[in-house]
Image 1 (cartoon, rainbow, N blue to C red):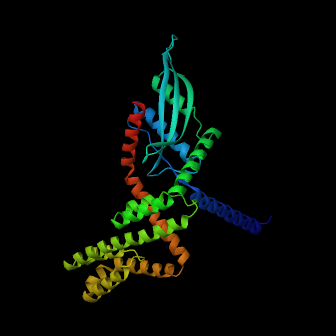
Image 2 (tube, one colour; image 1 turned 180 degrees about the vertical axis):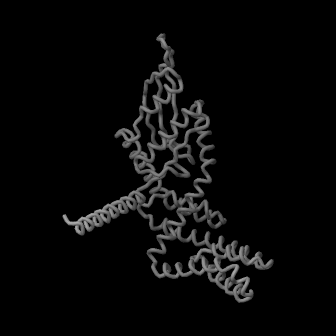
Image 3 (tube, helix red, strand yellow; image 1 turned 90 degrees about the vertical axis):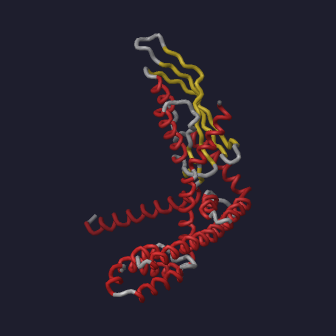
Length: 331
């Protein structure tokens, strides 16, 4: 093969691999179901052991195509010590027999969706290392774990399918009260693979539009307050953050034009960078606006980012719910 053909072969191979990767990523995202791994603070174990257990729990989720963030469904581990003996050897060894269990929990209802238990024996000179050895005997990529996660996924999908209308109505109610982030978080947890997801996408687009309008109004008001004290640089910074898809974008554009017309050349030079950034965003928005498919996808992706960020913010609340459930079940 000559050099020219070799380069062409490498280029085509790279393109093919990129296409396969992109297709796989798109498919996995559509099929993805969220489960948050949570090790309860109520578990009476040293921090080092909890850290290993948390890592193993997260691997069980992520190794089988599951997202590791959900505001409702969590994967909670527990270790039950059945026997703990010190051997009469030299040096003495800690011999453990434990049950390591994993519970997929509906944190809102306090209902166990699925569970699996591993009876494990471990021996080590140090007690903590014996616990860690026991945890590490669990293979998160094993067929057993795959079947457990797949079964959990099916049950979670059944939940979303049967509660789809109710979840959308809850989100719309939250939005009506101005709780746009919570509404988007609730909707973003719904897997795209669910039958009837178009209704979810429509609700996300509508609520995200309301969210953008609120944020835009706040930014415009901030800009006006800065303009009042002739702080044009910070005013332009605020206006540059107004999303082009907001209904208030024209008002922001008019305000930019008004400022530019009312200040002298020196002041215009001082805000040139911010004005340029604003105009670039406006041009990008106008290009995308004509492509309705791209616009809808952009809306849903951006709304999902807001929802995921909100779910992350709510994680301390989810952890507290898990702690309460764990205390009631195991203490």
